[in-house]
Length: 345
Image (cartoon, rainbow, N blue to C red):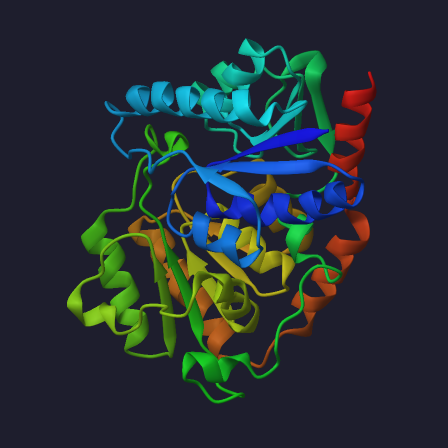
């Protein structure tokens, strides 16, 4: 049988890769339709996945409807040739629409509550919607909750190991501690109606950190000249290794903050909005600290960073990571079983 997987973000490639590996072992043929966002194609190539691109999309709200139409047409064209028996996606309205046109099942995974526009579309054209148990919305009868996070699909100890000498690839000594900073462009649909951290204030905050600590910056947005020398310049498939060796993650990506937590690296998530999984990881496991980019909260953020960087590595973070791993379900196995059951029904 054939499975078409629609991809809209680099993290989605990571998420689906171990699922695809297991499905291939069961004899499925799998093709990805990928939005060319950041390093999505590069990561798919590093995994040696079969894919077709559907264009780069747009960060402009006014242009997004045109991308919707173009993507639906592109995926429809791909599907007519590939003839999928089922569609998989991460909150994709495009795959949902095409699956309905072709009368095929569509399984969706989603973990981002503040995304009402896309959810309004895909929930009407999906067979099943799978979310973490801590997801703060209810999609009715087709909604299935799993006690896990998407990041565990690719960052569980069985699926991810890093080189203990990796710091040298970043130009550091093996015992040198550094901060990994992650900055995003806030151009996704779930960002359109959210308040944002002003660019100048954000850069000033990061610049102050560079005066004190070794720093690596992974950024989707342009950096001022004074920060450009800190930019992460290795291939994007090395990013998770850089994250695994950081002393702390500081950034405005909920996904990267969660990836950091899965690796036992404390994460400081700075944003006005949050997610159900961010709240749960912060409250239950203490692996993420969420603060808003206000003057008072940023002072707390700096104090937290100084505390982490000036003290020895806290063993409690690794203990909390192990506790999290022991309490969460196998999201890869769950997704594979859901595909099999859906095709049999």
